[in-house]
Image (tube, rainbow, N blue to C red; front, side):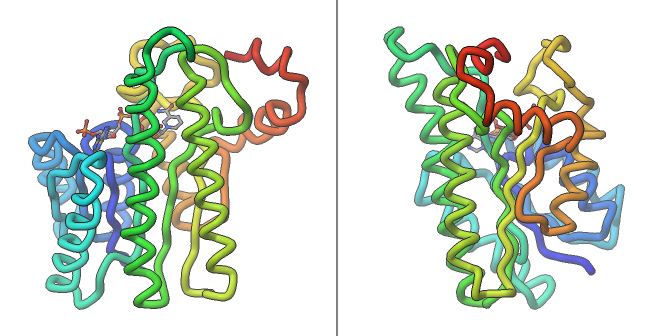
Length: 255
Ligand SMILES: NC(=O)c1ccc[n+]([C@@H]2O[C@H](COP(=O)([O-])OP(=O)(O)OC[C@H]3O[C@@H](n4cnc5c(N)ncnc54)[C@H](OP(=O)(O)O)[C@@H]3O)[C@@H](O)[C@H]2O)c1
């Protein structure tokens, strides 16, 4: 059945790819990011894929935390006006990756920015989405974590991995809150390497897959409303088990 779905970080990579998959399945979409020209081009593309859906776009810098609430509520009204229902699924996807630096090398501001975007802003998104879902008694929150959440990572990935572990725990806590609310679901996605602007030109990353394939698999897990999923499951599910259980000496060799 068609749903009203909000995606943050929809101007490129996984956000844009998931939007295309979801449009083809007949879902209405609300898309936000900072690069609005990209969102407008994507809006046209999505309406060409499926002229029967509604697609709304708005500018959002997720680090302007108050704006996360304003934009979420504005999209909720867009959906209410168009379909009589508000936001039904919220995909907290916006994030950055490559900007981190080894802790202790004088780049506190750079590492803190990763926390602002990948964690504090995800908390704002979860707050805004859950306020709507708690009011209506139903909804689906999707949090995009990462396989790097499975264990502490060294060097430039240390802060990134910490934020991805933090959002996974946040999602699990909200899922626990909602155990007696059968209408509210929370999904945590742990993508492995999927080729996007975030992975850049590095094709040698282990088990990297193309974006279209990755987005198809992510959407499959989202549509199934699973609690959590490593994507793709092979080889990342067993790799995740190893990451969690191997001695740190061996885990540190993996990145
Ligand atoms: N690709 C992978 O291998 C991989 C693996 C694991 C997890 N992930 C996670 O998947 C998510 C999407 O990443 P991606 O690979 O699709 O990377 P991407 O192509 O670089 O896309 C990142 C998206 O986040 C948005 N964004 C970044 N900073 C923002 C800000 N301050 N305010 C609002 N939007 C912001 C960007 O939009 P604007 O720049 O237009 O604002 C863009 O749409 C991230 O959370 C990432 O950590 C990716």
